[in-house]
Length: 323
Image 1: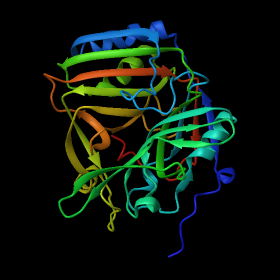
Image 2: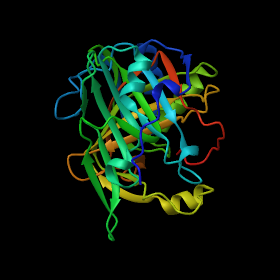
Image 3: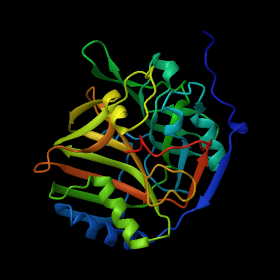
Image 4: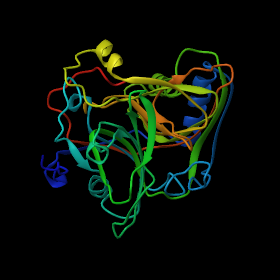
């Protein structure tokens, strides 16, 4: 079988919309009030971004500042009901085109480059691209392996710029600057950490579309996360069939989750929230919710995006497979 090449970036449809950018101090108040309905202990502040390159966070650049934007490529319709294997993208080129070159940090969640693993896999994306085009990859894949169906987390090499099928990234220059810092403990409500924030922003800003992204950590507790099995040979047509195909795990802290959230689809057929996590052990996958409300501890650093760039939006779409 001939190797699958990434699609030509210059032939993909790029669409762009400006997002509403509330002041960080205003966002702090909104996020504080909404999380307080869902967690017993909440602290939200506007602060200088810590060095996210430190081992504690593990990103490929220090900050979340400098022309922050959201980027969505492809979508679940390219995976479900049946996979479209040709939907393979050059993430480096797409980021460079979206940011008009320069230094770039891109973090988030997508499907991993299946040719690299000879299998479907999750992608945890954490890339820096220098102004002269050098890619440094701190990204990972997570896949389901063997008869025991264990989770296997593997680094993606600097020579691999691709993702498959679907991708949600927070993209910026990696510069230092102010961010929203969130810490919360002991979940008392039913919403997961990200959905709680997103719902609060939606209620506050209504028709104004607000997007954010960055990193959150689960420092204590466990999380319910999935890893995709290899591509299904039979069509997956609804959430029930999807959840039978996915492999779910309860994964222990510490988990570092990268991704985005946005309040509206904005007429771009967007995924409203998407975070994938990695760890220093063998765990990684798609965040759903924590399973230890009494002991869970979250720590997050987010910035608000100026715009959203939508690439290769599916012409035929559906609404399942987006949790």
